[in-house]
Amino acid sequence: MVKIGIPRALSYYKYFPLWKAFFLNLGAEVVVSPPTKKRMLDLGSRYVVDEVCLPVKVYFGHVNYLKDKVDFLFTPRVVSVEKGQYSCPKFLGIPDMLKNIDNLPPLIGPTVDLTKKDRTVFNTVYEVGKMLSQNKYRISMAWFQAVKSQAKFTQQWLAQSFPQELKAPRVPKEKSHLNVCVIGHEYILFDSFLSMNLLEKLANLNITVFTSEMLSRKVINNELRDYPKKIFWDFARDSLGAAYYYSKQEDIAGFINISSFGCGPDSMSNSMIMHYLKTCGNKPLLNLVIDEHTGEAGLNTRIEAFYDLLRRKAV
Image (cartoon, rainbow, N blue to C red; front, side, top):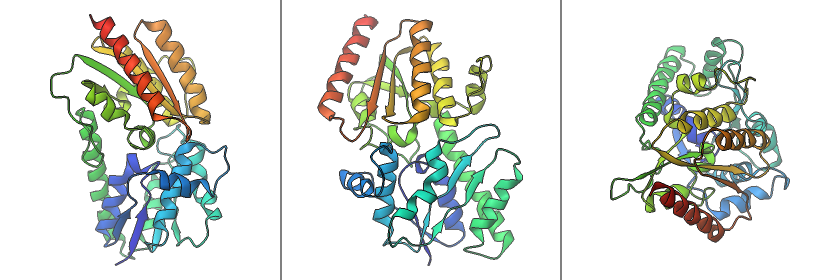
């Protein structure tokens, strides 16, 4: 049985159910790297320049972990997943950047680009599928099942629950009196190493978390309908749309924005989010910028101070 490795980083946190189901239905074995640890970061940092953001360094670490354990590595070039929207440049350049790693197995690196025609997705599917089967019908059925798996994953989010594919934080023992919107890319927020267990820390404080993943594309687009300029970075659009939506919800006590140092799109979207939240109301905002030198003790202090502020305002 062919073994296909999928790094537990970057697009894993958004599209893993899709590609896992697709490969399984074509008879392959899917091997996923374990949750991020410091060893992953150390492995990845050897192959990238210092200026590269932390999530990419971690991605390279996951690739290094998998390279001797699989027959193929699935490393797609994600250009766009929606017409008129574009992914971060790091998603575009991943397959090229990985060439710096020695002794890699063959890469399955299709280009996912839906900026022009929806038909291109089928071309991409067949391009990947024919590596495992020459039967077009079987490839089509595998993709149909994969789309259903992804839809189920998305539906769990829209039901405001953490999907089983992700490690859900501990549920507060008592009904929470504090709701907080946490804005951040899923590959940071749901990686417990990168976020330093932020979600679990908030759960321990009896805080209920709401994220941009819990909002449909229709809601995001509607919130930004009157924004003066088009935001073509999809992650930035989701973040700003979530800030707009949750700022109007009376039961949201405050906001936490978490991002990686050196992220180009975030350097712009973070400023827009902070400016908007400062002008639209008086809900507190905690802005967290992380890199490999961020200390967890300092993060804990800031979270506890933010929690105390929320409690005082709630009285």
